[in-house]
Image 1 (cartoon, one colour):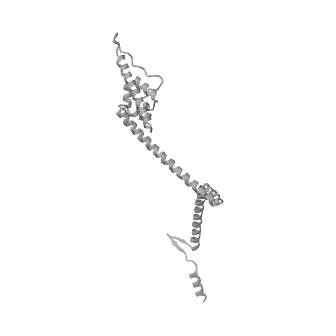
Image 2 (cartoon, rainbow, N blue to C red; image 1 turned 90 degrees about the vertical axis):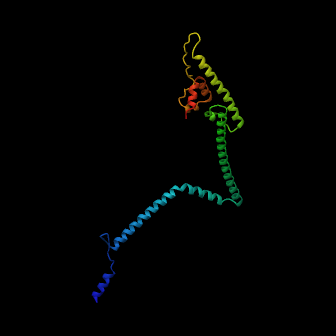
Amino acid sequence: MAEEQQAVNNEEEPKEQEQGGKTYTQDDINRMMAAKAKELESQFNDKLKEAQSVSADERKKLMEEGAKRAQMTAEEKAKADLEDRQKEIERQKAEFEQRMQLLDERQALSDTKDALTDAGLPKEFAGFLSSVDEDKRSSNISSFGEIFNKAVSEAVDKRVSGKKTPSTGSTTAPSQPSTDYKVPKTRAELLSMDIAQSQQFMNEHPEEANMLLKQR
């Protein structure tokens, strides 16, 4: 009888499990599962703390707003909701007007380039002359055309008359650039000059100015 009881007890003891050639008891498995659970809990707590830290200011703002709204009367709440809607409408209106202004400016610039081309003037000056006001744009182009054509004509006459003197036949030295501005070396530098300086440069050096304007 004692031998049979011993056999039953042996069968009820936890059996060892084998994995990858290594033997694990039930206690070993329980310890590994507990360690894994602790690791997962630690990772979860870290993520929770990070989320709470990131949204702390936002939660505080929402709580303050909620507390403020809770203390309002029905009339005050309706008034606050109306103000919120009005602010949103104003925001959308401002955004729409900004987009329309940008479209108007782009169209005005395109129209200015076309007008300069039709007038035989360099369209590279469109950025200086463009305006969403059509009358002002036309006035700018007209004034610029008169000044530009006069400057080119005077510069050509000066170059022709300065090449040779009737008495000696000697050539004169080319005009030196004015010290009032930096002589542009590229098209971008020419376009970045103010109108007065660019006109002075074109007056003194029309050929160089035309070459720069033709650059791409």
